[in-house]
Image (tube, rainbow, N blue to C red; front, side, top):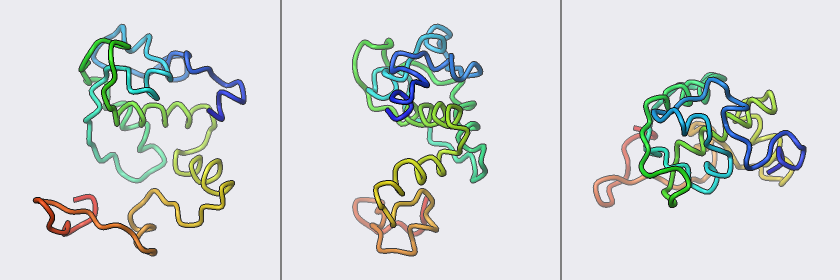
Length: 147
């Protein structure tokens, strides 16, 4: 919404206007999906692409590139379906508009202005503070982070 307030896009701006390289399996969705669709979970894009694209400044771009084969769970705008992929795609749009990485953008534009001193995006940073532990198999503590 900060980018909307700054006039850099609207909620109805197609993602492809900011990311001309953006693709999903359906060519029409690739051309017409908007930020509003992504943020309201109405894009219909399969949201379950769990992919480790590394730690570099290009990790979000690599993830969005990997979305090229994502199918539709439902027609665009027809209903709502939680979409993790859509939020990563929206994050890439913000990277392009701001010229900053997602981590820097989150830190500089949200965490720091709010005075959030324990907000991090990487597990090794989180581990310096008290943090919730993941669980697997009906309640056993997870043996590793992100494993």
